[in-house]
Length: 248
Ligand code: 13P
Image 1 (tube, rainbow, N blue to C red):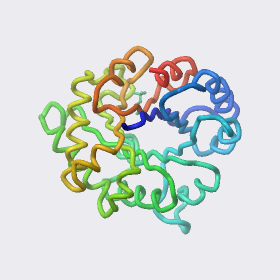
Image 2: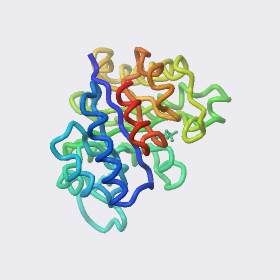
Image 3: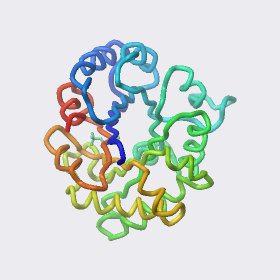
Image 4: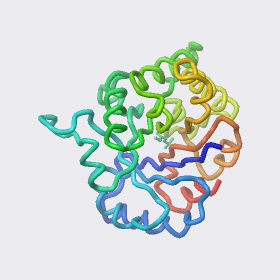
């Protein structure tokens, strides 16, 4: 019932020329994808990548979005600005932003609400650190993050949201969560949504896995009943590898 969604988070990689070359290489490789496919290049590449993928099945995502529509927020980008460029998705609350740039559950919520109001689909990231996993508080952590991120949203808005469960210890480390662990924690995220909005709505929300997902492990991860897609870092930077994930 839930359409899979695979997003490539290019992080701080590729200048506009490199970004266009990667997007163009991808187009034929993913043309028949069953999943929704979203490319999230750096802000400065959005215009060029948007032009390169126009008319294809690829969609454009940003890696962040500010909560205000305009104003004195040096270095930030608003949802309406992104929308005007043809952006449809925005990653929000990535663990790297939480860890290095002071992102909090509250700002994740504010950014997500603003994204929805402008017609963008937020891809909201949640996930535990290695220490939290070892302390056995993973379920509590992702529950708190999920409920906080969705605070104040209508049911209609929550239905549009995509959640990415990314255990921090699996990001860029080559250590993937086992498909069973990923599935179990995603089930906890879904229960957290159900706790506020009811089970029927929670069943409609797409929840991705992220963290060293690649051409080799995508098939197994995507076969799990709770996993509705992937948020791909390193493996999204090579067209061949990313296409294998997309065509899982
Ligand atoms: P890697 O796929 O490089 O582990 O990164 C995952 C991630 O952070 C995607 O947002």
